[in-house]
Amino acid sequence: MGESLRNMRSALLYMFSGQKTLKTIVITSATPAEGKTTIGANLAITLARPGARVLLVDGDLRRATIHQLFGVASTPGLAEILEQETNYRQAIVPTKIPNLFLLPAGEASVNPGELFLAPSVDLFLTKVRSEYDYIILDSAPVMAADDTSALAPKLDAVIFVVRGGTARPPGERLGSRIQPGGFQSRGQLLLLPLQ
Image 1 (cartoon, rainbow, N blue to C red):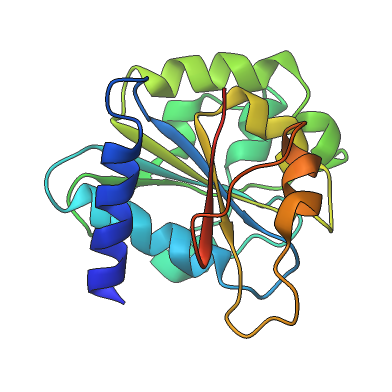
Image 2 (image 1 turned 60 degrees about the vertical axis):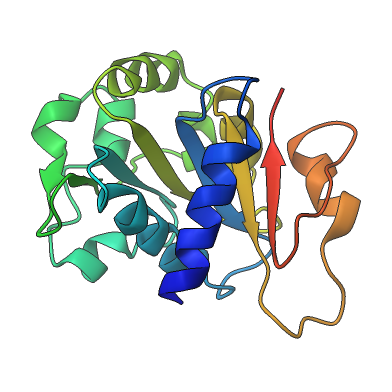
């Protein structure tokens, strides 16, 4: 898996050469249990290893698990930041991996889909973009919630994780939930650069 992630890192870094800077990436899947959280966490580690400052955000406010992978508390987190109950610097925690920082999901008191439409999302993203080289955001599955649809236009790219051996790839039907006009398949991990 390590070599595959390094290849994905290279593809992400050079896919946009000459176009725009790739800083913010949302990772999603069509349905739960396709491996998006594992891929997101490992991609963040792979980006941090050469020295880039990386913020891994657990944006799956419905089924948060990243805090468990790194052995940190689930709150305060993204939900509290978006609800303006805490400062983002108080919620972000360093990990044992140099240059990798984690923002747990927190605990939303309202529908997460509504939170991602709030102006506080843009404010938060503006602040962290200036402090980190990459922001990797693990989001809820597209077919389960509208969270990713609300987030995707605010970010630079979407990575769709598709479990191997699925009967039908998500294709344009899944991409159209994120961006009108669909997207091009880039393989098992479907990469969607946003305009």
